[in-house]
Length: 106
Image (cartoon, rainbow, N blue to C red):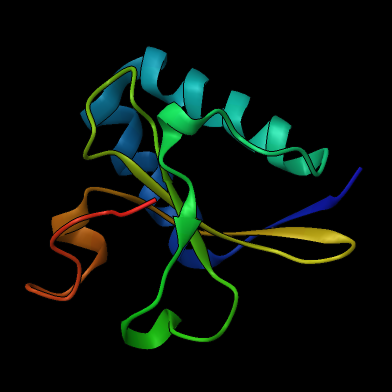
């Protein structure tokens, strides 16, 4: 099982996400984190994919969607051999500069 490392951005965003997406959304977020912590692949419905643009390009960052709430609740993370880095969470608008991430592609 991978060790979890939460960035400051993730910790700050989590408080906002609790308000925006409620208990149900945060519960699904932690379910997804538990799957990733075990090194397993996510169900395709979460649209898990590499981020290939902006400051995340070529650094093995990934994002996935917490779909129970809406398709715009996103987790950015970086899987490493022994740890899972939780980078940020929130809406596309908050996490990505305008025009840098119009669509999530599988």
